[in-house]
Length: 431
Ligand code: NAP
Ligand code: HSE
Figure 1 (cartoon, rainbow, N blue to C red):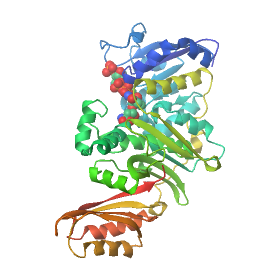
Figure 2 (figure 1 turned 120 degrees about the vertical axis):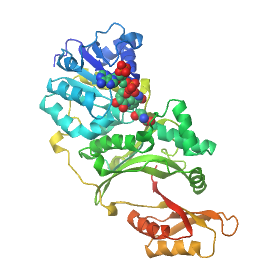
Figure 3 (figure 1 turned 30 degrees about the horizontal axis):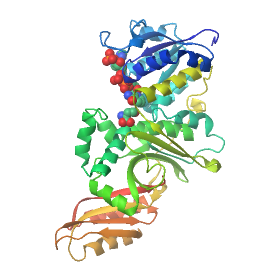
Figure 4 (figure 1 turned 60 degrees about the vertical axis):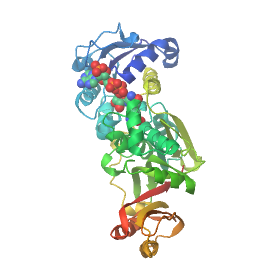
């Protein structure tokens, strides 16, 4: 790459993130040129609607005729900020890499599904594919896992990776309101999408986790290996009980090396009060990486929004300007291991269990008997009685045990005509 002339940037997608990138490139041009060793010049842009009002920094940048033309242009780098797993984003990234253009993207959905294939394509063509903004937005955790935390390896990565879910859980705790109520507010405030399923169902966290796991463990990102559960079933009562036991409920993405393989899951978890992850509130994201003998590292910051996401995209551009085009996931794409989902025995922890039961003689004994039968030991328990025969919640914390054993016990308990609805099971996680 000729580093004596400006880095020529073409950008597709001029929405929240694209607008922020254009603004930062203009506002900090001198400093970025100094950091990158040469000027960073936005030479071409493209979006769907040419007539839409845009940031003033985009006013005089020439538009490409279409995405195909952008991929064939004389730009050095194509920035993909369109979004979506397939379609326009995938075609643009593939065509750009084939045309030997570096690519920067914030698109976690795209990389979670096509990351390994695109990493190989980038390598074959000798160009970079950078994605700092795709996992945890402005937090520089992609670079940390790819380049910094490598001497001792990584044993586990745990993260609050979805600001919408963390906002909802934080508000449910602060106000005692239901999931549905708080979600409706989040939509009004513009935090959650009109169709929030990707956020609250855990899919967005799974996309990001697949990338962090790829970087940390050298495995091919693959959503099929991630057990994913969202936060719809969490009640204000669970949040209150969690607090009473000394925990907060957080939607975590966790990837962990176990003797049985890499366990990857997205699920609400109990995190002990006073630990760094438990203290992350509102729309903030955070990642804890346990790096072997080097110990745990904690990163916190804004995981979304115009400025934080643009910050990550611009950092990737400056790296490319400097000539940093190392392998996409920190090792050759051919070295990324295709793994299978970890078997059930990979999952052990302590668990929070909540049962809604009729307050009748023997109900508690039946639950305890089933847990004992499956060798699940109870550490502590709360039941607040109402009237005889009325519905009441029994809440327990277990000692550490296999998740499969708890599930066996819950299946049996669920069958009882004194137990109402499905029991709730939430694992404990280190924060
Ligand atoms: P956005 O505001 O919806 O902007 C999307 C842009 O893509 C718009 O400019 C749109 O054009 C353009 N576009 C859509 N379909 C297109 C097509 N077929 N051809 C050409 N252009 C097309 O989205 P965003 O929030 O900036 O997100 C962009 C990417 O960043 C996504 O991958 C997202 O997951 C990721 N990301 C976003 C955030 C965040 O905080 N927003 C954080 C982390 C990662 P028009 O403007 O003409 O409609
Ligand atoms: N929907 C995502 C979130 C946006 O709530 O965190 C950034 O990826």
